Image (tube, helix red, strand yellow):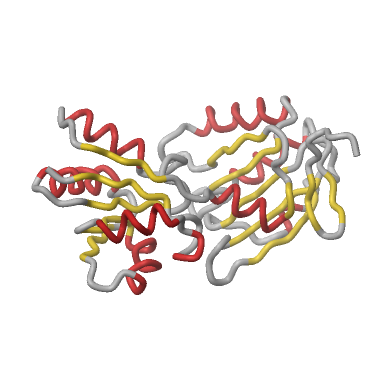
Length: 243
């Protein structure tokens, strides 16, 4: 019986991957993942067998990983960002549990997009924050909008993942309008596109004008809380230290 490594590769390629994650790929016999993610890694691990699959094939991917591991292979399952934050760790553990297998699964964390985007912008998540995906593929929009409402009421810094796609062009507008009920129009908003990857761009806008900027599914949107400010081109959310 082999072993399963569920790896968070970080937001980009090899440069943001932890030594622990690299080591797991090196010892693995097979590397499995979404095609776009493996394309970023393949040239750095020559000689490894990579098995790629498309989007929405997550369950099938995990079943394949389990099958190969039960055959005796050490298998690395790759997620972008952190494998335990909107990644493959939960699905993999559920598939293993449902199978009744006691195979060893090691979850290896990575830098999530929220952390990577925050570093680009300055220090916007130094206080309590909420990460909310606007994708309604797995979660109904009614619940997503409720979470945005409560996070805004609670004065959390709000990090939005998957803010916009061809089929969900209006959700980011609704999200902004919800937050506008509880925040000043001049609240800083950081917008980072393709964080950690080729073509990375960032801009700091305000809650009022944030929608004037290009936002797509590869964008992370960070909405400051009532204390967030901009200084020397950086977003800062003070923790409360006396200086």
